[in-house]
Image (cartoon, rainbow, N blue to C red; front, side):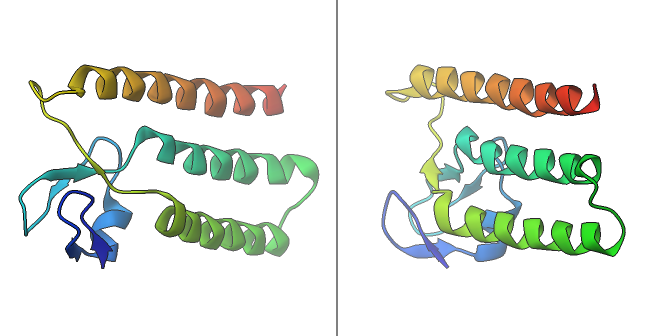
Length: 124
Protein backbone atom coordinates (compact mmCIF):
# COMPACT_ATOMS: atom_id res chain seq x y z
CA UNK A 1 0.00 0.00 0.00
CA UNK A 2 1.09 3.56 -0.71
CA UNK A 3 0.65 6.58 1.52
CA UNK A 4 -1.66 9.41 0.57
CA UNK A 5 0.50 12.55 0.13
CA UNK A 6 -2.24 14.61 1.78
CA UNK A 7 -3.08 12.70 4.99
CA UNK A 8 -0.23 10.16 5.22
CA UNK A 9 -2.51 7.12 5.57
CA UNK A 10 -1.71 3.97 3.58
CA UNK A 11 -4.88 3.77 1.50
CA UNK A 12 -3.67 3.39 -2.11
CA UNK A 13 -3.27 -0.19 -3.33
CA UNK A 14 -0.29 -1.11 -5.52
CA UNK A 15 -2.53 -2.20 -8.39
CA UNK A 16 -4.46 1.09 -8.23
CA UNK A 17 -1.23 3.07 -8.56
CA UNK A 18 0.03 0.81 -11.34
CA UNK A 19 -3.18 1.41 -13.36
CA UNK A 20 -3.06 5.13 -12.70
CA UNK A 21 -1.75 7.56 -15.28
CA UNK A 22 -1.50 11.33 -15.36
CA UNK A 23 -5.07 11.61 -16.62
CA UNK A 24 -6.63 8.87 -14.49
CA UNK A 25 -7.02 9.63 -10.80
CA UNK A 26 -8.45 8.05 -7.66
CA UNK A 27 -9.61 9.34 -4.31
CA UNK A 28 -8.04 8.63 -0.94
CA UNK A 29 -10.50 6.58 1.10
CA UNK A 30 -9.40 8.37 4.29
CA UNK A 31 -9.39 12.07 3.41
CA UNK A 32 -11.18 12.06 0.01
CA UNK A 33 -8.57 14.09 -1.89
CA UNK A 34 -8.06 13.35 -5.59
CA UNK A 35 -4.72 11.62 -6.30
CA UNK A 36 -2.79 10.99 -9.49
CA UNK A 37 0.76 10.58 -10.76
CA UNK A 38 2.69 13.44 -12.40
CA UNK A 39 3.10 13.70 -16.15
CA UNK A 40 6.82 13.16 -15.62
CA UNK A 41 5.96 9.48 -15.13
CA UNK A 42 5.49 9.28 -18.90
CA UNK A 43 9.26 9.60 -19.35
CA UNK A 44 9.75 6.09 -17.92
CA UNK A 45 7.24 4.75 -20.45
CA UNK A 46 8.87 6.78 -23.21
CA UNK A 47 12.32 5.39 -22.47
CA UNK A 48 10.97 1.83 -22.48
CA UNK A 49 9.13 2.33 -25.77
CA UNK A 50 12.28 3.68 -27.39
CA UNK A 51 14.34 0.74 -26.09
CA UNK A 52 11.77 -1.81 -27.27
CA UNK A 53 11.50 -0.11 -30.66
CA UNK A 54 15.27 0.25 -31.07
CA UNK A 55 16.37 -3.25 -30.06
CA UNK A 56 15.41 -5.03 -33.34
CA UNK A 57 17.13 -2.24 -35.28
CA UNK A 58 20.28 -2.94 -33.29
CA UNK A 59 20.25 -6.57 -34.39
CA UNK A 60 18.51 -8.06 -31.35
CA UNK A 61 15.89 -10.52 -32.62
CA UNK A 62 14.12 -13.73 -31.70
CA UNK A 63 14.27 -15.10 -28.18
CA UNK A 64 16.86 -12.48 -27.18
CA UNK A 65 14.36 -9.75 -28.04
CA UNK A 66 11.65 -11.42 -25.93
CA UNK A 67 14.01 -11.76 -22.97
CA UNK A 68 15.08 -8.14 -23.36
CA UNK A 69 11.45 -6.97 -23.54
CA UNK A 70 10.69 -8.91 -20.33
CA UNK A 71 13.67 -7.25 -18.68
CA UNK A 72 12.50 -3.81 -19.85
CA UNK A 73 9.04 -4.57 -18.48
CA UNK A 74 10.45 -5.59 -15.11
CA UNK A 75 12.69 -2.51 -14.89
CA UNK A 76 9.83 -0.23 -15.98
CA UNK A 77 7.42 -1.68 -13.44
CA UNK A 78 9.99 -1.44 -10.66
CA UNK A 79 10.85 2.14 -11.66
CA UNK A 80 7.17 3.10 -11.72
CA UNK A 81 6.53 1.66 -8.24
CA UNK A 82 9.74 3.01 -6.73
CA UNK A 83 10.26 6.43 -8.31
CA UNK A 84 6.89 7.77 -9.50
CA UNK A 85 5.25 9.66 -6.63
CA UNK A 86 1.56 10.07 -5.93
CA UNK A 87 0.48 13.71 -6.09
CA UNK A 88 -2.62 15.61 -5.08
CA UNK A 89 -4.47 16.42 -8.27
CA UNK A 90 -5.69 19.96 -7.91
CA UNK A 91 -9.17 20.85 -9.06
CA UNK A 92 -10.24 24.04 -10.81
CA UNK A 93 -10.31 26.88 -8.31
CA UNK A 94 -7.59 25.42 -6.06
CA UNK A 95 -4.42 27.42 -5.49
CA UNK A 96 -1.77 26.22 -7.93
CA UNK A 97 -4.26 24.62 -10.34
CA UNK A 98 -3.17 26.69 -13.34
CA UNK A 99 0.52 26.02 -12.69
CA UNK A 100 -0.10 22.27 -12.38
CA UNK A 101 -2.12 22.32 -15.61
CA UNK A 102 0.61 24.27 -17.43
CA UNK A 103 3.30 21.80 -16.24
CA UNK A 104 1.14 18.86 -17.29
CA UNK A 105 0.69 20.33 -20.78
CA UNK A 106 4.44 20.89 -21.13
CA UNK A 107 5.37 17.36 -20.02
CA UNK A 108 2.62 15.80 -22.16
CA UNK A 109 3.94 17.58 -25.27
CA UNK A 110 7.55 16.76 -24.38
CA UNK A 111 6.61 13.08 -24.02
CA UNK A 112 4.98 13.09 -27.46
CA UNK A 113 7.90 14.84 -29.15
CA UNK A 114 10.61 12.71 -27.52
CA UNK A 115 8.92 9.35 -28.06
CA UNK A 116 7.75 9.80 -31.62
CA UNK A 117 10.78 11.86 -32.62
CA UNK A 118 13.08 9.07 -31.48
CA UNK A 119 11.00 6.43 -33.25
CA UNK A 120 11.07 8.39 -36.50
CA UNK A 121 14.84 8.93 -36.15
CA UNK A 122 15.35 5.19 -35.60
CA UNK A 123 13.26 4.37 -38.67
CA UNK A 124 15.27 6.58 -41.02
